[in-house]
Image 1: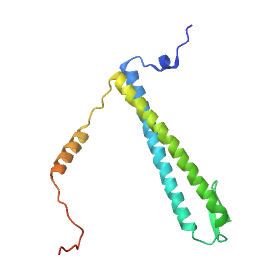
Image 2: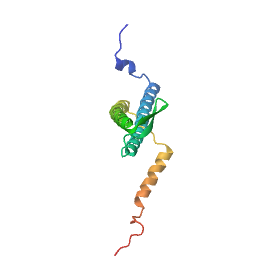
Image 3: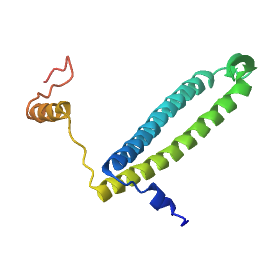
Image 4: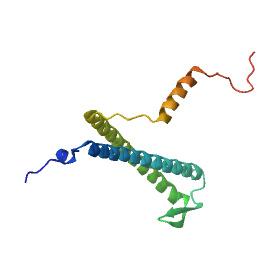
Length: 149
């Protein structure tokens, strides 16, 4: 028995296998996009909480959800934890963005290697033609109620 390298084992044999592998790569890319979006929403929520409780008295009571349990703490205890969580989420987003770029590069190389082109659906073609028409039309309007002297 001969040992195949990782690349040879992953090398698709026919067009259907190539299409399936390409589809799975695109799915992974979309999953990374989704996770980044989800985490960006969490960072936004953390920022709202930090901005809301920062100006308040540090000894004031506040409630925090930890593992599905609501616990009573003080702002002095909760604020640093929320800020640390936010920083941790931002780090994860950074790593996911790096993974996203690597995946985009892998997909581009795969597309070039197998000469893959995406077909445009009828909707995409209509959207592009309407965009072209939209670029030729349009009126620039100043702010409402503006009076020129």
